[in-house]
Image (tube, rainbow, N blue to C red):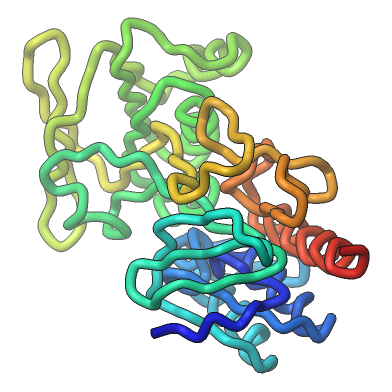
Amino acid sequence: MATMDVKDLIIIGAGPAGITAAVYAARKRLNFMVISRDIGGQAAWSGEIENYTGYQLISGPELAIKFKEHMEKYSFDLKEGVGVTKVEKDTAGFKVITDKAGEFVSKTLIVASGKRPRLLNVPGEAKFKNKGLTFCATCDGPLFSGKDTAVIGGGNSGLDAALQMMKISPKVYLINNTPALTGDPVMQEKVTAASNVEIINNAKVKEVQGDKFLNALVIEQNGKMRKINVQGTFVEIGLVPNSEFINIANKNKKGEIQINCAAETSVPGLLAAGDVTDVPAKQIVVAAGDGAKATMAAFKYLSTH
């Protein structure tokens, strides 16, 4: 059974936000713990990253390793491969209930659990993930330069991906499951005007096909099946925040935890950082900055309570 000593701080998640929060917590000499299913978060499965300060070019896995190495320079309790199932208010602060490591209590809490891509839930999706099928055009788009690609999604995320890919891909199929595109009109105009973008409305992906790597999509449009030969596919149908386990703080309609500019939630002592929050810019560098702010806010709370 887990020891029920009261930590100063528990950090849930070890992506860019959680790892940065941990580094700051260690430097503040806090008695803290990190609980996370994995190390690196979404950054770990990104492709080439060219917009993280200090690295002109680094792959997602390499950056995740750098994050982990930095974090491991400090001594603290890390529960890796562990998921959080529930967070409750406790007389001492917060009780964190996990799926396989018991329960832990802390005076302050940082939720940095990130987001996960909304899946297509079709045959072949799991098999070809990161083998031609990706969930981030910003991260992985350059890997498909000169190759025919498809973007799935007709909202702003899908349009943004199409705008990126039409500059480097000879042919881009924009597959949208509604009668018309739903993103910003200006973005729609640019995509519609592109000669190398084919917009396919009222279409659903039924299967992802390939050999060692993805090479085709099977779609259904107006009741008819069609096969599209592509070497890369970007699923841009939204992200789902990993926030189901926490119901004591205010969240928006998307399930994102609402925070202020100091990373504070509606509950005193409860902070949040990174993609699980309602901060609009979902970027690695932004998440890292929010992680730093969250620990500083936690330290301030501990100093005054």
